[in-house]
Picture 1 (spheres, rainbow, N blue to C red):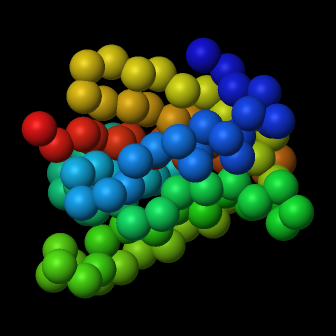
Picture 2 (picture 1 turned 90 degrees about the horizontal axis):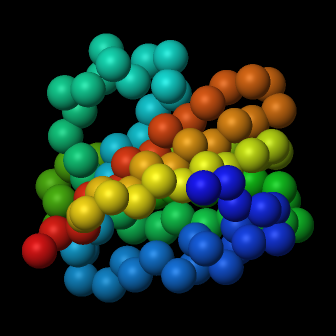
Length: 108
């Protein structure tokens, strides 16, 4: 489903980040298959800032004993969300034509 830009802040703020119960991977679609072995990391933050026109995702760090990673997607043009069972796929298209795939996995 395609999210309209005015829905972006509300959608991302609705993701429950309490208790390290969501794991995530992030990568450019063109590189995703070569990085498929990347282990999911705890999702720390995800959100869209309309004033800065940037989607920010941060993963890992702290209790995960893996380095923290932060991703910034500048000037997203379109965001698509697919939800199935305990996985959510978010595809963000930016102004340069890059496609970033964010996969969220809910822990039981």
